[in-house]
Length: 167
Image 1: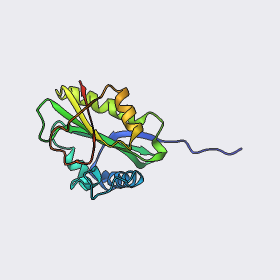
Image 2: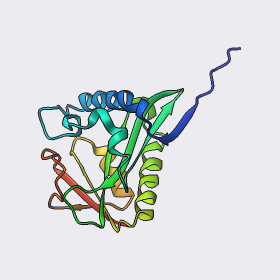
Image 3: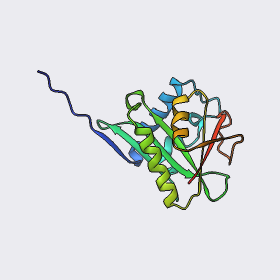
Image 4: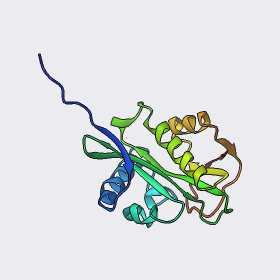
């Protein structure tokens, strides 16, 4: 009889020491889906290597998912840059294949939406791309509705799917 190593799964706020690992996750998942840096996707964000600093700002939060002490995913929420004061943005939800299909994206999104409500936001916006059908399905399940225009100044011009949820 063989014994298996227990799986250790932790969802926690990002720390400065997580910057390199979560940037690697985002780049890996982006490459997997053909989301290249020469387009307007998260992988081209100038702050990708300093997410802890970015999400340490007021009314912002980011959580990482550790699998056996290795960062394997994450997601966050922050005020929508260039948007109205009551609108936040669900941002940088990326998970390596090993985490998918376990409800972690839903768990993290719900955590982010709860945080947003506590911060006084009334609406949550997000942008994604049509190639991420599983993500779109999750967002629809969570009550996000498709809208026909981009909001704010995200810099993600190639994200053709825009959605909004009332909080």
